Picture (cartoon, rainbow, N blue to C red):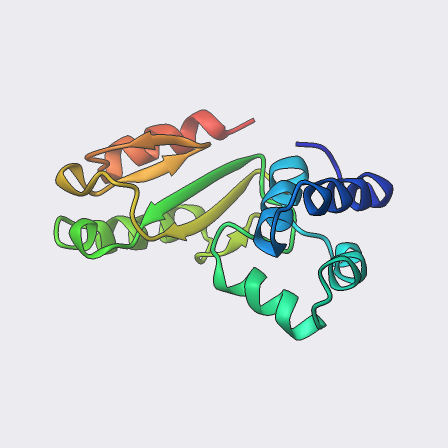
Length: 154
């Protein structure tokens, strides 16, 4: 992912619109390209898709994948679904928050780590589960998470 570029973001929005994508498709393309949806994309999104600011923000806020700020260099997405909660997911989330000093939806001040919730990774029989830098991890426990976090130290 690259840093935000307003000219490129407009091109991404126009390309997705011409390809017949919906607003969610354009948002997905922006996140795939930049890692987030910058405030600068609001006006082109509103104009291209004939939507109000409230409608665009409503879609962005509804879907967990549509961030409005740059993610950290490393992203840990902890499953919050019931199956993972039943096997220690809540405790694992609390451990991650204590260990990192971050709440869910927060990025560390140095930009190294973002902690996010996710609501099902399809690993229900092998929870608690997480996505760590986009890679699924099943049967995650506090010790294994600590090892992953140690690997992120730069």
